[in-house]
Image (tube, rainbow, N blue to C red; front, side, top):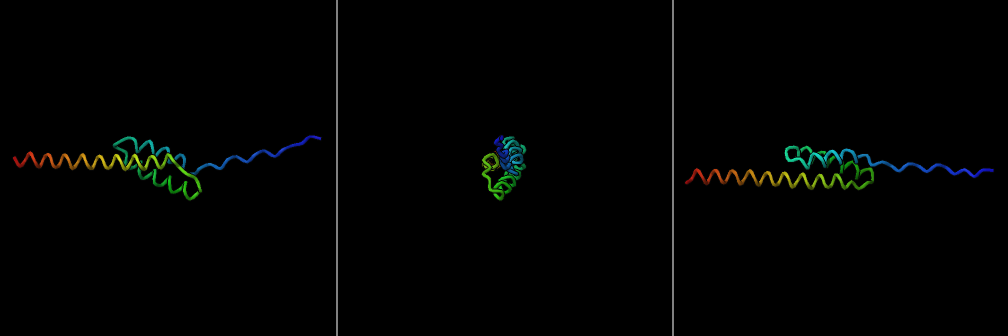
Length: 88
């Protein structure tokens, strides 16, 4: 008599994985970093609630924050430079 084994259950898929990848890609592009940051935060929360660690979403959050911070610094620098040029 043959000894049949049950097929293994497929691994549970992370529900926020695809959204995390999209968020990461958009966070890398400077002009879409805000959208990428928002999508990465949503993906991170979805994955966390499902019990998964979504490192792609976390990377998207970090990169999005860095790009937004750099753009704020660049805008303030440009503003201060134009103010200084108008003074003298």
